[in-house]
Image (cartoon, rainbow, N blue to C red; front, top):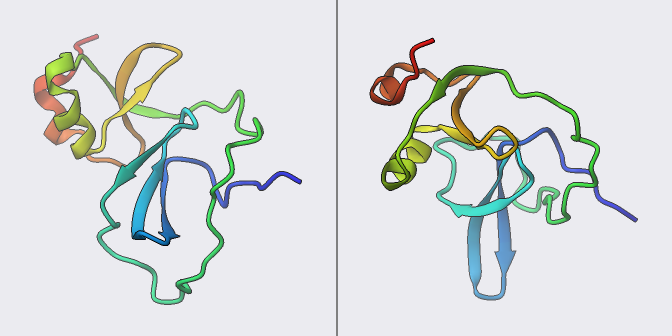
Length: 113
C-alpha cells in the first residue's frame, strides 16, 4: 500500500522519533532534507497529523513548477539562495524562484533574458 503525500511539494512536515521531534522538507524533485520548523503552524493542525514519510509514488511526474525567475547561483552561494526560498530544478540543472516567493532578494543572481 503506497501513501500519497498530503499535497504537492515543496512542503515541510514534522517527524517524531525516539530521539526527539524534527522537521523535514519535501522538495519538488522528491528529495527530503532536514529543515527548521515553519514560521507559523495552522492552529487546527493536530500534533499527530499524517506524516508523508513514504517516498512519492510518481504521481507528481510530469508536473511543471512555475518559476518566477531563473537564477545563476554559484555553487558556493547555493545555501544562501536556498535559505531565501530558491529551488533547484534537477532536470534543467538551474536554480529558480518558485511562484509565491518574492524575487527581490534574488536580484544578485537573476539571469537577464
